[in-house]
Image (cartoon, rainbow, N blue to C red):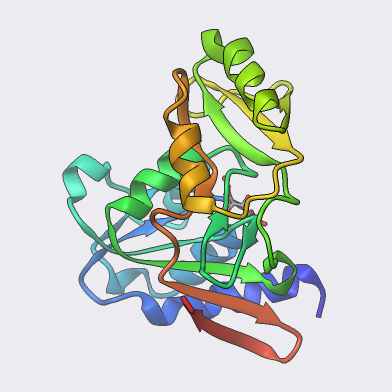
Length: 220
Ligand code: 5RP
């Protein structure tokens, strides 16, 4: 099975976590897109969705799936989204698609976070994938200097503006051994909107697409 087939398989498995008559959160990226396509087949079962990006909202609407604002929807039963890296504690790096801030909000407002990944995303230590930070444009240089001080090598994501009108700094060279601490520390830098470490609110369930089938993991 190639990586796309693994993503499709794990996205289909996440449908089991969708409860009838509820509003669910839907993530962003290629794995989340496969989930949206699978959700289209059971769309009559749910009351609606909240999307973590404009792109996902468009895809949901193209399937005739209702998309609501989070402020109208209230608490969500489940949030289903991919990740760029996941560790055994179900702490994640997200934001490869630049949607990290809305992803973090939707995850926070959900009873359960089901992360869907192919097995290549499982790592011992987070940080080989460059860590995305959404930053207010005027804080770019200040935040970049602070990141260098912490041992990182920040790079501006060229030609990219987030759905919230901000920039993304992708940070290489961070070995993230204390994910919760670093998430809080980076969140405290003035001008940082959000950090792509999802450790203070990790996933509750990790569905991992492997050549042998879908593996279900909960935090160890
Ligand atoms: C988008 C994300 C995605 O979940 C992450 O980048 C994984 O994407 P893909 O499913 O395409 O591998 O965080 O901001």
